[in-house]
Length: 185
Image (cartoon, rainbow, N blue to C red; front, side, top):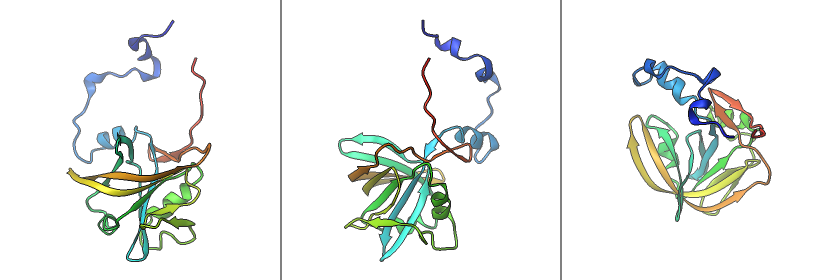
């Protein structure tokens, strides 16, 4: 016999929704709510003027469209890297594997060569891919839309590759997490 929806909202998950707070910009409440969304981490990289350029995104959404294949991510308007990266004709998205937390931190660091010591591969059109990731998407920008203090970028996916039996690096509640399989009871 399966539980009803109301049966599932008991114990540690019980919450009085009458105490909801306003979603004020940059508030602790908004950050806490957004941090409840677990997200895969992707390296968004390309060759721009012969230099590897990249940033880290935990806002990648897949399945935006299957025909044509499209994914999206959002990037802060004050990003120093995105205005350079968006000039590339092709951009690579590498979904990082669970053991690549240090790679994520390195690629998001400021004031140094983000790619120093990293093994990457470049596609013919300039997309850059991080080795040992779990999947790779060769993309071009299809649309950019302003959304508050971010831009939402829709990518057209031209080619893909997937690693066998690897888990993604998950960012949740401001920390990296590892997926664990559970048995449905």
